[in-house]
Figure (cartoon, helix red, strand yellow):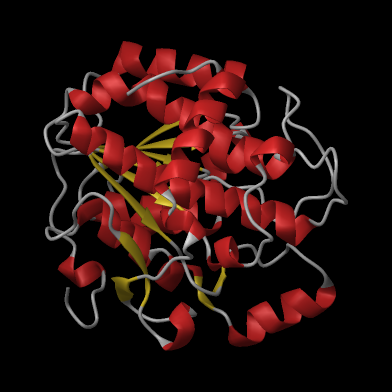
Length: 300
């Protein structure tokens, strides 16, 4: 891994097709722009069509000739996830890069269309279902990669509560809910890698996190917004670990990439650390089973 990997080291992706969820802002916008600049065709999977069109215009401004396609996807609605997968597979026969990036962040108490707590439903269960539904297309594409966006917040939670994923039996705290969802995302990435290897698949399942990046400048309270603007690294830097995981030649399944600076808060892509719970294979297998039960999507 180069000490300071940037977009200048991105390999060409001219024949590649990528899907980026949550592509209309923050990390998703920067990931889309980076992949498009390397020549990939990028499907921008977004909930809000108007915001997606504005984001696509911004990418085209930065990357003239960018090959982009906008498709509707609401990760908080399993019917939308199924519709997206069906429409995608009707249009495309390959999928080289799936960036499971879309995320609910520090949302107030709420439920998805299917009754899941907002963070776990959007950040983990929506992507779990999407990946499973797109798995046949990924399997048919040599060297395909899945990149799951986790967070340092996976360490900032009291842990994964499989018997209370939706905060029905404990007080709701937005950081705990967000952290639990990002822990689930990371556990899922590692378990997906284990299952793909066992199945002899050529898909590489990876994870990345952006460190402390100013990806959603309008989110959070005034104090958080102030410190984000003052100390956080730009979203373009925060996107580099995901872009590295998606495209760098030395990436392997099970890799977790984050910023290489002090405490992984900022810097260029480097191997990232994770909590012990994130590496708990037995707990991850139980999470997988529970995710299948909740989403109705079963695979591997």
